[in-house]
Image 1 (tube, helix red, strand yellow):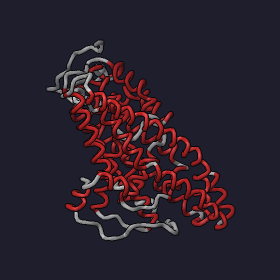
Image 2: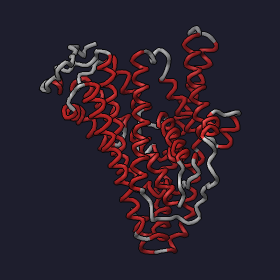
Image 3: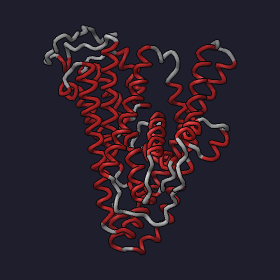
Image 4: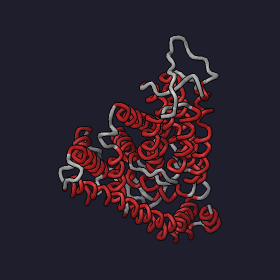
Length: 415
């Protein structure tokens, strides 16, 4: 927040720091395409055919469904609250041409030339081709002989993707180190230009995310999935998940929280290992409901600041982009800042907004990570219920009355 203080104290002369912030934004633009390709290929490697059986299909399907609902909730709440209204940025380059027809948008997701899509930064087309290519490799890999040249070649490509992703994360680390200075410059320039009005923008952004996360956890996870499908008590579910939720709120990392999440699933929620052993590690990679929700919220926030109006078709494009980008979002603190570049680029919104909100992202990231962990455990509970792999008579469920007509499954967690 030092940049905000400097901007308020100095005034418009602080706008001379803008080029430093612009360099930070340019560095983020630089890594959009490679990080999408490498991280999505890593994600498809986890979705190998042997994992995509009955349980795997249910887990992946529910993860995608809850993420889509989360983005829709985020967009709906954003349209009601309109965060960023009343604040404008000068010299923003926003594409305002008429949006193409829905059929054209859908066809444009499939690239006629993947190389051109990479060169032009067509985000949805890049995501589509990368997912198709990655899933194709997993299918071929499962069909060929273990020591064949084709199998070795596919393993090499995946290993290159793993290495590339690690390199990109190292570059991201370097960019975020420079981002301390970049964010300082952007916030100083912003507050120097706008003044105290920027504080209201932060408040409404935080309020929008808080309301959206509250709705997602209460309506989708607790009432629909836990009460409606599992037949358990939402209060008991929260008791059984509290260690993981508190840890996620503290350390802002789905991946680092994973051991605690698995412990809660096993000891408290009494989910069998054959379910949570697959669903939770996968969820730490592909189930980013809070992150995807936030991407949609930031898009509305950026549009309001830029004085642009997003059409229904553009918001559908945001939903699709955020849904697919969430699959490749790393489960580490503030990884969504990188993914925002793809979503904002997709609808032609100014990337300067990323630098503007980076200063408060550590606070908002805690809510998003907690949402992600709650979603992982709720989906795991549902899939366990469907596959007779949860014991509703022990753990945190032991004191909860079982509803009339509900069946309980007596299983152990020792396999």
